[in-house]
Image 1 (tube, rainbow, N blue to C red):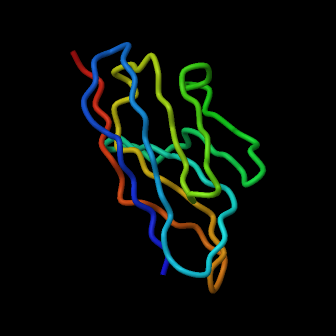
Image 2 (image 1 turned 60 degrees about the vertical axis):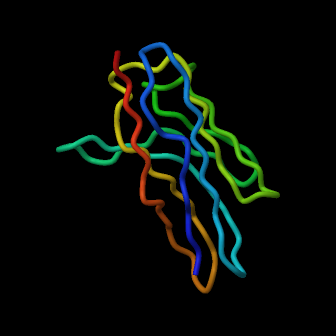
Length: 118
């Protein structure tokens, strides 16, 4: 069984920075695309950023130039460096991974709260 475990959320002032991490653990699996989504109450979960196994990235327009996604394949971990945070970035951030284990499917972490407020 594969699990995704996020860390790094919290409370930060506008203009501040946070770094989220998500580590995949389990046995006999391979990671393809990994990334981050976010969700606020009453809204659909939305894409923040994705990174493929070869390092290609894709960002939501709202975070381009402020957020950077990266991954360490040796640690099965994906990161999201968030700079110049705005109150509108407040959300629960979910880690996503496309994983091939006994079958290929999408996996999700439990989410980590990011709150941007003064």
